[in-house]
Amino acid sequence: MAREGSEDAAHDYDHLLRVMAIADTISAREGGDPPTIWAAVAFHDIGQERERHHSGDHAFIGAEMAAELLTNTLFPQQAIPGVQQAIREHRMTGGVAPQTLEGRILYDADKIDGLGAIGIGRLYMITGRYNQKVYSPVPEGIVEPVDPLLVRQLRHRPDYSPSIEFQLLFGNLPERMMTRTGKEIARERFAFMQEFFTRLKKEAEGEL
Image (tube, rainbow, N blue to C red; front, side, top):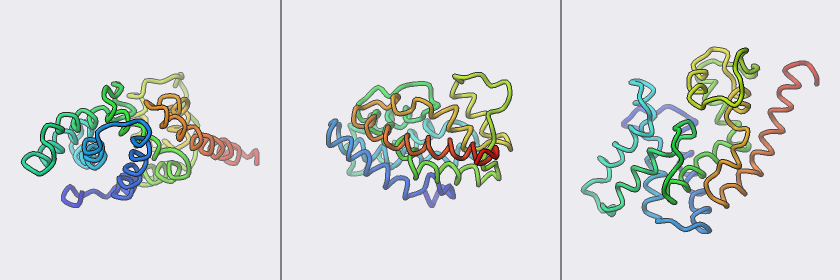
């Protein structure tokens, strides 16, 4: 991460530690191959800076980087393709659901770290980096449900805000978790987040 020049506080080393802990909790109940899960978690966001500076998709960039970093090491070499697949399929806006158990565990753990109090903080880290809004309504003309790829485009707008991201992308997120354990954890965190953004809207619009 240091070599890549990572400066994204929402996708930092602490994020990896939290996702690793969540993945271990899910895996303890759901199964999966631990080395594959751990490596996929460790490298799932390694392509973030290259995407930011050179475009592309950090999931695909990261999958290639993971293979380069793991090849000819003590890591079980036969597990590298599984690590790559899990990383390629971990994005909520990627359009392809994870096909392996290890990929589903990474997907759930990564998304759960975007929920609850931590999730609120991370959203504001991201929008704050681009001097975007504390609160703004969904832009006119946007009809829900939206294609997740449209959300990627909206993220570049100066009037974007965490409230827009939550409304357009998080609506049924707990039910989109890929494991039973992931769903249970996500539901509790989502409820807290929903309460926060409901109050935020009322305060921003002068109702409180």
